[in-house]
Image (cartoon, rainbow, N blue to C red):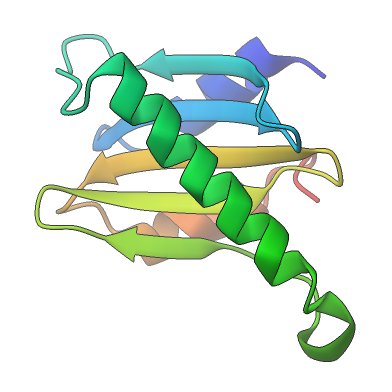
Length: 118
């Protein structure tokens, strides 16, 4: 998997994207890059915990797949950021944070249209 290409493709979709992270289903970070000039709001430890919580929530939701179908994405909206979590494929999760003003619906649609998104 070409993580640099994925990061680049997604980061170029909208200047309001703050962070693109790709991790495997065990939480191993394959790639995580902030947009240049963007200040991280969380410490490194807090960022890792946030990713772990998103991953664990995704795993729990996946247990319901037989009844409700595969998850397409999860959107969390906070006062200062939005966080989008979605499967990249069966083994990887995509974690994207944006500015609050980002048109998340349009961004999610564009990400899902990428040829390598599951």
